[in-house]
Length: 161
Image 1 (spheres, rainbow, N blue to C red):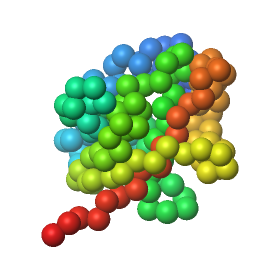
Image 2: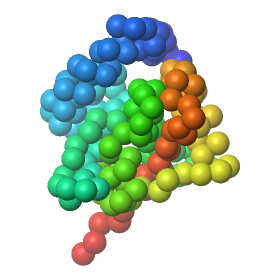
Image 3: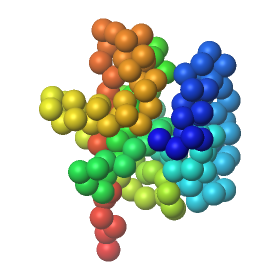
Image 4: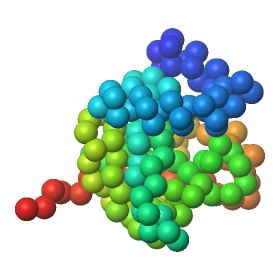
């Protein structure tokens, strides 16, 4: 981990960092990410993307900044439904369960993806990479128990004719 990443992680795991990530960062990211072609967010370069889902109940588009990790086993991404360690699942994860197709703006222009909820060994393997990416996810896991944090693999959808 680079020094800047270590410092940001330390800040994010503090009380002030938690409040920043919960309340201010999503607002900043909705402005920063589109203006930087999906490269820059409040967490730095290539850490957060804008994920647009279809509302599970409303059917309307819903855009949420999410931390995304490259899935080392493929060209997919991993999305973590930690909801900052709160007791309920984030709404965007229910949206992906109901409507797995989504659009993601991350490291480039928006592209179409399809979500798959990971379970069993696949989830365990992904979780190890997730905690390596940000150790705070482990404290989120503890604070939201007994809820299991949802982990999604987001695979690119080939462009149609």
